[in-house]
Length: 357
Image (cartoon, rainbow, N blue to C red):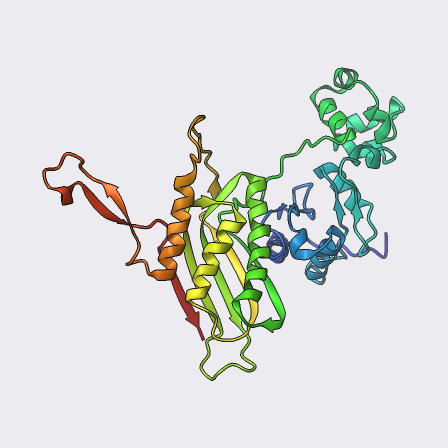
């Protein structure tokens, strides 16, 4: 084409653009997947895990419009967005969505019916299989979906099993984040700036709930929380710091948003913001796979030990870590009674606070 403009590929520039895009999308969700390799056929496609984020960003349509908005000017062209229960259906929805327009949202459980009228060649990148699908008259995805799986496998082998599953609306690609979510962070601006812990409690509950849902969906738990409060300095006293930072370890790794909220609120009660709050950010760190707990069958309230740890941690925050201790048996047969036990600090009481000007 005489009017076409050909540009030499710049891998470094592409990598920087995709990294920047993922960083902006991470403000909405900690689960981001995408390739920054120009040679990867999936280059230019970014996948965002949005389960459990409605309480933060509203409906799925509102979420995707906001995400597309933060990418404006960062990547070439306007974003096309699609949402579905499976990665393939979401990809097709995004591919056929209007550029820069509303997202195509597939209702839960309707992936197969949504895919049915689209071309069958979308099911695979293998050009030979695409040609064979056309020769057999299988031009639409719905025509592949109604065939017996054994017949498709017999004709196309292992790839046939995958394309048949995609056609039926089954998940064939495991969602793998670009990085292991060792830390997860979300923040919300407060407009107008809020005063008082009750307003902060509401925002903290939303943040903890959204991150807790993300952890639970991945079977993970966090062992540490960091809260950053940004002050509104418009009517604050002179010398008021710009930010207040609080770090709090948990008695045990958890994904329970209510437990996280209560513990952090206790810290904020002891170290309240010194001015109206313009933004609140919550980060969960030390994220690792959650460990299961085997409970005895005939012992009531077998998990009461873990609940006690959280209660003691809140008491230590409220009354001081030096005033709340727990007893640990040392040597039950020691001659002196004072040698049979020793004091131990309460789990989860280690925490730090800081401010920045």
